[in-house]
Image (tube, rainbow, N blue to C red; front, side, top):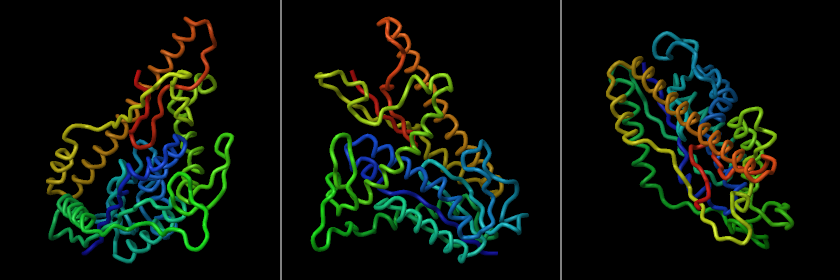
Length: 319
């Protein structure tokens, strides 16, 4: 029986996140990227009225037991793995894949203007090719297609329009930024609107007894810079050596069921380790803040000199 294998990935992530030099908007953009390949996947499946295997993307084990290509004839879609900026989903037929793509595309267009969402698919027959090989083929096809895509500039203003002071795109709204009022585009507005939800997610990295005394900053000037002093900011990417080689090795698995088990376990382990590493850094900075304020005889309150985001990327000052 032929199924449809589909992959979702965000393109040009760096340029999307850092199209603005405002930290609040950077964080909101990162949150939208994470949502596009995690939370919105589940929403799009449900809105397309497709039965599937996802329970909760944030759970330790977000997948129900069984496989669409074996024993779960009641499923119309099976998420193979999700997270890290991409997802791979197996659909029972092309119609289900198309319905899902429509819902996800609509959500991205409305909630994250100018985010480049890349969706590619191919037909897969279990009898002709192991699933791991099919996923590898799909990703190669996707990369080749992306490399051939022509540049797609955004639609600029028509007639008399105000210009966004961050991106140069047509302004959609006038918002208050500190003591100023600024015209912003739909892209910047979406990022600013997502920032508060992103902050709620980040606060989970702080233990309950620290949430009232420490906070993640919303502005680059609050990221540890001393008044009147020159400062530097580093963007730190959490990346692993030879991750691609590990994924390729897993993709050589000839048993499709075993492939799904291995790639899911690996994906969830990377996600868990990344979160634990981030929490360890937060704990270290909180402790240093407490020690510093104790020496100075002040209360241990204020901003942490650290701003993690939803894609294992970090902003911190360099002394």
